[in-house]
Amino acid sequence: MKVQVRYFASLREALGAAETVELPEGTTLAALRDALVARGGAHAQALSRQRALRCALDQVMAEEASVIADGAEVAFFPPVTGG
Image (tube, rainbow, N blue to C red; front, side, top):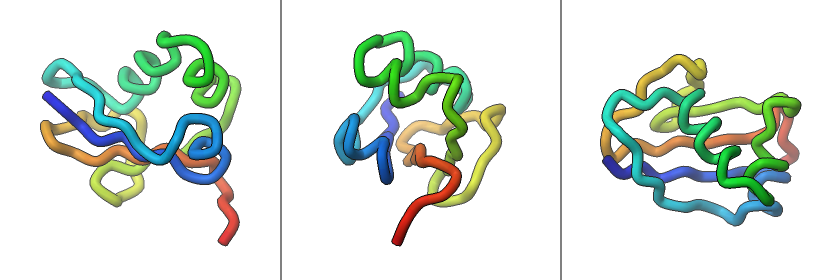
């Protein structure tokens, strides 16, 4: 399945505004984050488990245990973002 991943604030500066990612059915937000970190480089640094990040699934705040559906929009951002 394909999902759109969007990045905001400092994550956008490090990774760009968005990308499309191919995932297996039943993938959770936590598994997506771990897969992106496993890419290494900028993804590993920006999405590191050492950093506090928030997630949204289809524009609704979500827990990392949430399962992602095909065609969903996932957003990652720091806990506090500027205007």
